Image 1 (cartoon, one colour):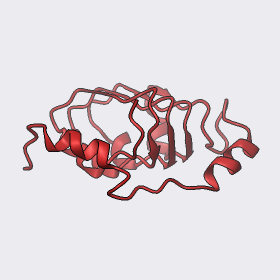
Image 2 (cartoon, one colour):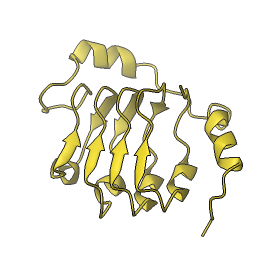
Image 3 (cartoon, one colour):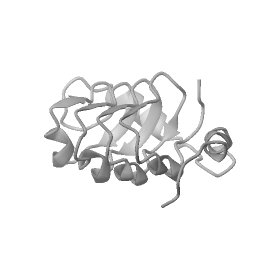
Length: 136
């Protein structure tokens, strides 16, 4: 599986309708640039080690029907995200949400943030370098 941080270039996949990177070793935050994936209907990032807040830009995607981000270590989601019908946010570290990880597990994991440097993202950047993605 992929063991990296999602690079901001992922937002260049503007024609994608499904983006599923579940069951990998992804870490760090979701890039706000994913809000440029305006045709996205299904987004699944479950069962990784992702952290931080869910970007508002993702929850504003006009065609997003299913957003699964369970079994990660996210620490926040905005009210806009809570209104999404097809959402699964279980087993994260989001305060005041049901079915979350124990606070002790969240503290232990988030004490060591992911290093999302350009070197850490080499695996993803190699994938993007060989793809035919338009940079408009």
